[in-house]
Length: 124
Length: 163
Image 1 (cartoon, each protein chain N blue to C red):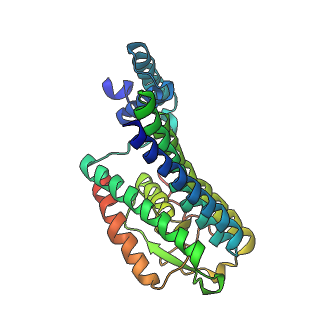
Image 2 (cartoon, helix red, strand yellow; image 1 turned 30 degrees about the vertical axis):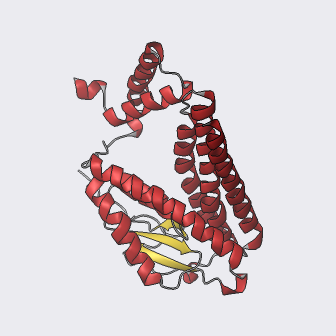
Image 3 (cartoon, each protein chain N blue to C red; image 1 turned 180 degrees about the vertical axis):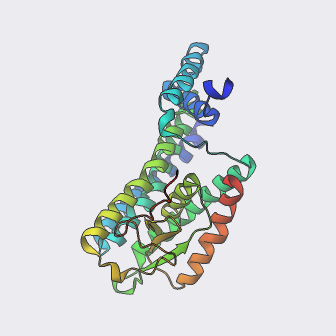
């Protein structure tokens, strides 16, 4: 039983290492910042996810205790990764991208880094 | 009275669960401490939460989470194979504009996060009036199709959940 458990855990750890490596390799290989953002937000997520699954399985099957920390790490990762990517993208675009290169918003206002939000109607 | 004491029941529940997860052992004492935190923190931070986000259909929310988890796995494999096997010169990156039907800030936040975590797209900017979202595609053969996929697969469900 523990043999099977250990094989499964080993598979997840190898998967984790593989996706982590691909994510980091993507950072070097891709050409501009916007493309590079794709590598850490995705390829790494599954890498960390696999490592966490391996950790949970290890504690559950080998040590015989249930661990919740991994679920919390996943939660915080999913909360922070998109936010960080969003901020990096916005900063990069403000400094390096001409607004004429961006597509139209298809609404009344421009993109938020370049345009002010519409003034709300004064009350009272 | 209860509304005053517990302005955000979901937030209180989430805080209690997170506390239990952090201490990693389930005892009555920890549950009580978590519950106290779940009561006090929303009260102190109430000025930052003027509106009460409502989950209209919790079942749709669970379905949404499952779909997104599955898509994240698919996204990882896709992006990994793009990085490994595609020559840089063949990448066709582009910007797309996704017009939004969602209005609640929570729903838009969740949608933007989802777009970043799923296949080949990163949400980069909102329009100033929050009616559209700017998305960067790593490699897209069919930009129109990507817009339709985001709207159909995610936004429709989120609209059910939040609005």
